[in-house]
Amino acid sequence: MDKQVIIAISREYGSGGHEIAKIIADDMGLNLYDRSLLDEIAREKDIKIEYLEKYDEKPKKTYLSRRVGAYTNSIEEIITEMQFDFIREKAASGESFVIVGRCAETVLKDNKGLISIFVVGDKESKIARLQRVFNISKEEAETKRRRHDKTRKNYHNRHSDFKWGDSRNYDICINSRLGVEVTADIIAHYIDDARAQKN
Image 1 (cartoon, rainbow, N blue to C red):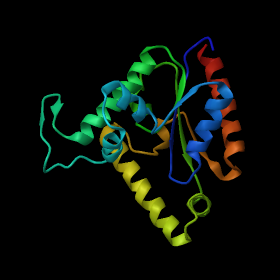
Image 2 (cartoon, rainbow, N blue to C red; image 1 turned 90 degrees about the vertical axis):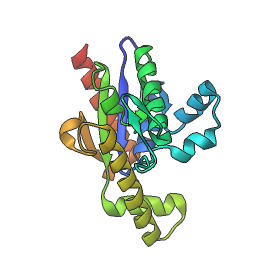
Image 3 (cartoon, rainbow, N blue to C red; image 1 turned 180 degrees about the horizontal axis):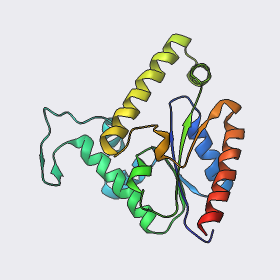
C-alpha cells in the first residue's frame, strides 16, 4: 500500500459495523484497532487491562473530577486521552489501519489519509442481530441497543466537535440492511475510489 489510509468506522449498536470493519481490515491486510487497543496500552503502560476496561468509554464523574489547564484527575478522561494518543501515534507512524469508534474521525480529522464511515441499521434488523448474537429476548435486545447507543452518543458528543451520526461529518453513511458482507463490499468500492481521487 503506497499511501497511508486510515478507515475510521463508527456505528449504531447492532448494525454490524464492527463485523464490517473486520471484513474490510482482513480484505485490505490492515490492522484492526477496536477495544483491543486497550490491551496494547495496558502492556505499554504496565496497567492491568481490567482497570482500563472498567472505565473505557464511560462519562467522567463530574462531582469527583477536577481539571486544571490540560490536567485532570478523572480516570475516565485520562483513559480516553491514552486512547487518543495511541491513535495519533499510530497515524503519525505512517501505518495504515482500520479503527472502530474511539472518536477517530475527530481525533484524526486533519490526516489526509482518513476515510470516515458511519454504519446505521434498521431498528428491527439491529434487534434481530442482537437477539442472535447474545441469545436474548426481543425486549432485552431493545434495552441493550438503546443503552449502548446512548453511551456511544454521549461519549462521542463529549469528545467531538460534531454530533454522533451527523451525516455531514462523515465521508459515507450507510445502512447495513443488505447484510454485512454486501455492505463491506460497497464500502470497499468507496474506499478504492476515494483513494484514487486523493492520489
